[in-house]
Structures are given as C-alpha cells and as structure tokens.
Length: 124
Image (tube, rainbow, N blue to C red; front, side, top):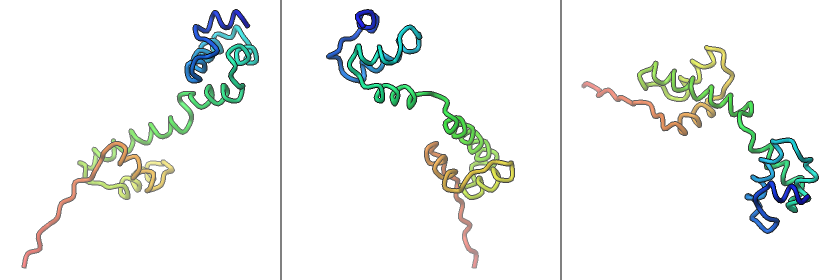
C-alpha cells in the first residue's frame, strides 16, 4: 500500500475527485489490483468503478449521436437551411437512419440550427 501512496502523488486526505483521477492513472498502468488501489487511498471500489466506466469515451450512443449530428448538419446544409426537424427526419429515414423527429429536433437545438422561414405575402 505504501508503494501506491508514493506512486499516486496524492494523500488519503485529498478530495475525492483528486483521488479518483490518481487511481485511474495507476489502474491504467496495470501494476496494482483495484482492491489495493482503493484500500490505499480509502476509496470504495464501487465509487472507483463508477468513475472509471462512466467516464469512458466513445460509448456506442456517443458515437451514434455524433454520426447523427453530422448527418443532420449535412441535410440541413443541402436544403439551404430551409428544412426543419420533420423534413430532416424524413430525409434521414429515407437514407436508412432510425431516428425520431424529437431526437432530430434535440440535435438541431444543440447545434443552434434553425430553419429559414419565409412567408409569402398574400396578394389581393
């Protein structure tokens, strides 16, 4: 345990986030078991596992979301910024994507995409 404390560059009295990031670095090296790491810095194993696995990058839904963001942007630009979420949804479904209108609207909102609305004057 003393080796872990020396290698971790933080103490047992350090804030939890600091301990978790130090443990994560040591865990990635593969030198110490999770039990040893957590016992040395007085962190519960559950807390450590939650920290490690929730922070993992490129989860399948993150990859899918990024892909859909690119597709929404592409369709939006192809339409000369005239399509709203419903029409973009229709184009994406036509191209083989399985997505809802609400999800497209959410992505458009995140990306600050707003369709250009034009109103024609009624002639009398």
